[in-house]
Image (cartoon, rainbow over all chains, first blue to last red; front, side, top):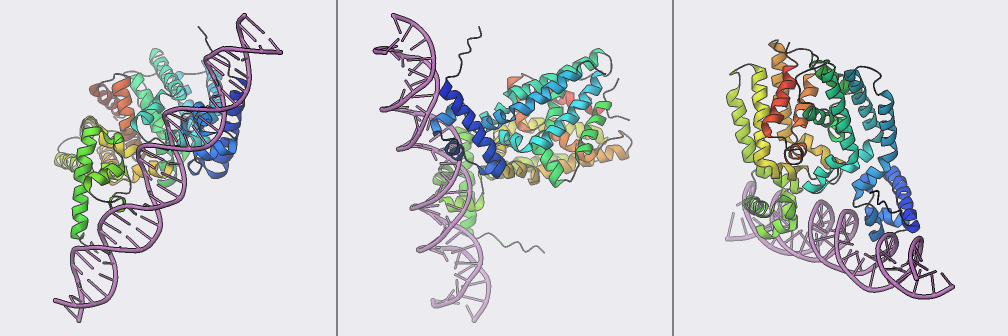
Length: 196
Length: 196
DNA sequence: ACTATAAACGGACAACTGTCCGCTTGGCAA
DNA sequence: TTGCCAAGCGGACAGTTGTCCGTTTATAGT
């Protein structure tokens, strides 16, 4: 196992240049206004090289989010076992809304998809899988500790995350004028309803 | 008011031909495998004509769904006032899951989007707006009648609909192996938690 | 019937995505 | 050091989306 072959030096350099160029261009012009060709040109690599590393713009966004995601994961792990599971879950939902506020552009970039395969790919993404497993774990724990009862934790984990998906979130924030606190509070009320 | 100018005869004929061609091609090859140019060619109209009527493939899918949507709307209206609001809502969620099963391909086509504008457009779509208003109305009614209490109906309406969005639905059905009944039952449990 | 004109038409075109493939090169083994 | 070759590279290219604009046509008014 662990057949991980190390990346060749030129390949690592290309990856670094691509990510740097993408970070700069996305920041300056917005994700949607930058084409993959522009990223390649700015990074000084050809299309083949670009697409070899990142199959599409969403991959690039996901890679750029990597660092932020690790911060989030560490914060979650640091809280482990420190309080009631349901309170930790409430905190996580709040934290995800903050993540949305801070990383909306890249999260949005990950959701651009031209066919069903791409759209479903979102849910297979390791970040989503981790969130899903984490939320589900908290729900399971809350059931074990008799904080709540009678729910399908696997399904409800998806429901809670769907409620915070970036497209809906932006729509609610910008077009419906809801604020972050209201959205989080409403989800917490929903969880409260499950209290045993 | 009602400044509705009638569609010119040639325009109406084009629309008819486009919808017929799209219905056939989407049915035969799947929405994603058919390009807008192919639809135009099959319909015997140019690109200009095609895009004049339907700004993008999602519009075309929405138009093809029109009839099914009207059936759904009439069914909902027929149930009006016939029972407790919360039961009507439970029924509607079940009905939406059936709609997903039957119209997944076209619903999916409406979600293909290459930028944020397009992604948010989904929520402005009249069908979504109607669903949203309907679910919210049922929740408001349930609060009035003291069936439930303490919830943000406007927000929860979006949550319930997000829980049934076609991408998540397909993922749960096909990759997680959940069945329709389980998904609907879990949402109903969630609603039960809100009972006063 | 005739004319004016707004609406509709169609296809060329520009931009973007993603793939393919022949050339180049880093790194290992002899 | 040399030679090998898998990995990497780049840019041409095919397919798609969506726009633009010169031409045609339905229809209302005379």
